[in-house]
Image (cartoon, rainbow, N blue to C red; front, side, top):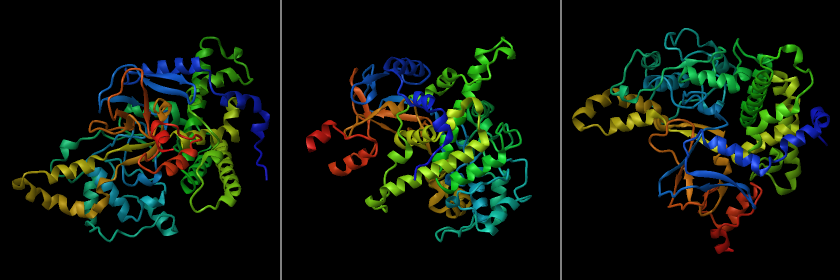
Length: 485
């Protein structure tokens, strides 16, 4: 059965124009401007005959040199990770304090909130001015209804409730925690209980770029926070990649508004046309247009438990799932002047962009660093300190070291082509404590040489590598693969 979305038929030409790959010179100019804003003086994006574009060295790199630090176009922490890690919703650095990070996690666990439940924690329990025990009805109601329930891990030893609450409230200070300071928490400008920030500048940047349309608080600019909540719940119940697609659409709508205001600044409202200016929409879409795309239901890998004979049915189900998500999002943030963005074709390609180009968003936890520091203390100090810290570590169990995890699209990193014998890799150094992508050289890279990374585990056998890379839409012809054929 064919799935029809009215906007796809109404704006087919405009949708095709948005999805058309930009000309090579436009791509080169865009990335030259982008590179000027990044910590990456020694690279350049150039057109390539086989792959469309690639990243090349403009200087010599030594092994372990920093090649690139790339800020994401859009990214999101996995909902299931939000119980374990409280981070800035814009730059993804950890916020608060060691005590808050530990106390919040243990407090939520004692309430029965499990990381695997991916449920919403609407309660504003991160404000140090409020008492932990005042009102935890939202989370308790979810536990009673069966939406959020978990049982304590067998290898964990629970802490007394008053100790957890004193950590959570900031009443208890752990020894040496001041050595692992974090930025204080800044609340969402719209008043939602889901997004928190490390600074006013991050809060404002997220609001202006994404969150003003996706906020569920009283200050939200969405058409309906109730509809938005339904969209978010559907994404959490099915696939959180929809949250990333929503951020891209929100980003484009807000960018379109800014471009329109800039174009008509000082001209008066009467000259602003009521018709859709598709050239302006194309300009707003430009950062997204640079990412390689295919429709999600065409490029998603077939799960191991789905038989090949059922592939067509599986891909149709994925398409139907995307349509349901799109319809929910449309009710929440639809914009008349950006209607093509709410076509199934555009939505599918945005999701496909993340499927094909995403890099894991990973930020190491300062909580892990804290306990490693305690473990390395001289024996003369360690015994006394561990009287306080060991029961807390026992309560956390193996989960003490969980890092911030999510998915993001990085414009420059996405231009790097694959090789099963790569000369660079994504790697977080000790000083890399936010959500930016960090690429370092695996070996010396000469000026003029293409910089490549591996999209898969390059140590796998040849046939397995090729099968995995087929999901990206190409057959690898790197030097290693040619040697093994």
